[in-house]
Amino acid sequence: MFGEGPRLDLRAFVLCLIPAVPNVVHQITQTIALFYIGPGVYAIFTRSSVIMTALLALIFFPEERHILRQWQFQMGTLLGLLGAIGVFWFQPEANTGHVAIRGLLIAFIATTCWALYGVLVKRPSARLGSIRSFGLISFITSVLLFPLTCAFGNVATPVEVSWFVNLILAISAVTCITMAHVLYYVAIQEIGVALSQTLQLLCPLGAVALSAWIFGEHLTTAQLWSAAILLFGAFLAMRVKPVATTETAENL
Image 1 (cartoon, rainbow, N blue to C red):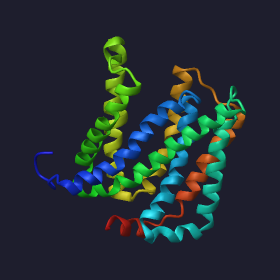
Image 2 (cartoon, rainbow, N blue to C red):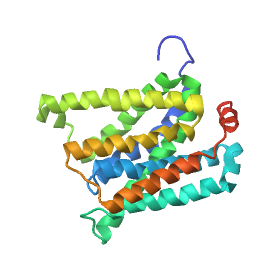
Image 3 (cartoon, rainbow, N blue to C red):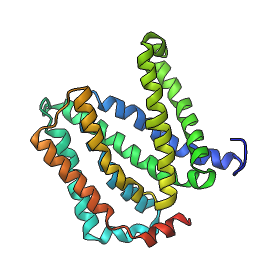
Image 4 (tube, one colour):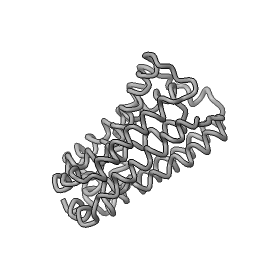
């Protein structure tokens, strides 16, 4: 936090604390969700956060509420939610009992918290900058997660596993978390909260490919159709946001 730029004060700390809370919930619930669904399926399911982020952005940014009246957004929202449910429900090993419903609920909470986090990081990012805001939010998130780890996890796990596992963890932390979040913050500053989610529709392609290669996960035909419906719905919903509105929101 040293060097040029806005000073860290109590208001800036609170602004970073607010998005850190849903980030903590997201980190926990997305991990639990992987006990019910594979990484590829979850990556597709969580793309519904594009629509949830847009809905939350409409709540926090009143000038964007006229989007709700556009048929593209309404149709895209409906298709996205139906596709998200289909991707989860049509798993080969899915049960129709309480376990499947519980997993769907956990994945939904994880996705909603990610969307809420994506909206709430807008103001601290604008105040402190992308790198500083990410550093402080990450620190607060780690502090909040540590007592939960002590209570429900095993803090000695890193020294109990091999060096190769820790290497993978370190590489993923730098590339998939640090770089990805900072670039995401920059995107929020440049094109707005909702539009910055659009390119993330490409994430499931890589996730499905890697999951099939590493874990042997394969999607059923019904899941593929549901994934196509979800991604098309998310893309359709994002098409209604004009550039002028984004520029106005960035000036708040």
